[in-house]
Length: 235
Ligand SMILES: Nc1ncnc2c1ncn2[C@@H]1O[C@H](COP(=O)(O)OP(=O)(O)OP(=O)(O)O)[C@@H](O)[C@H]1O
Image 1 (cartoon, helix red, strand yellow):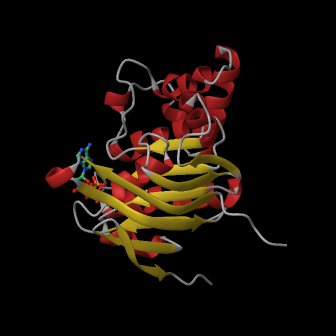
Image 2 (cartoon, protein in one colour):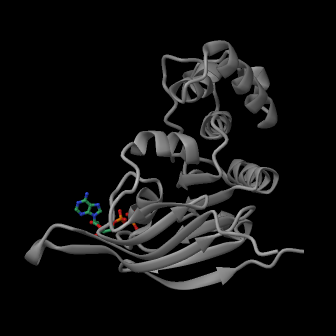
């Protein structure tokens, strides 16, 4: 049996500006990410990491190429779905550097809101939120406001929120940048568990060398091109 990639990118290019001001942020990038894997994107500032993450997240429209997300062709020279918001809600969970929790909602409400945006009623959304907070080991903090959470706790709540709609693709932009190495390691272990147990693909933009050994593969970008890939062998 062959496993289909969850993210399948072919010949994606993206530029900003025109003429002398043109910047080629991605040049003919192809990439497959398989279920159950955690991959890293590294590279110098301006190499195209965030652009690639935002293209996969259907936030930025590329200029050419094609992209399949969990088997569905979503971009082929143009977006193939009129409603990108519902596409994102259905397929993708986002995790940011600073957790981006809504400061006026408590922990479980922050998770539940993502579920209600996808159409669930509040009771269903709360049940799911509490399940996910338990899964991530922060159920005791369910009523805490974001300002009362430690950095590690807040990032776990943010991961729970990213999982609210059971996406198969999790995109994380520098998720450990604000954490010490022990907490960073824990967040990466949780992302590995999420990938393994939910058959998801986790894609992490990072500069953080202390977590490089936690990836199955790390792609190095330079000037909009994937110039190399390192594999971490696992027992
Ligand atoms: N909205 C935009 N308008 C114009 N140029 C942009 C825009 N977004 C990104 N760029 C340019 O595209 C290139 C790639 O940027 P990108 O943010 O993807 O790099 P990065 O590798 O994520 O960098 P960093 O590590 O600093 O976040 C850079 O030259 C950047 O200046």
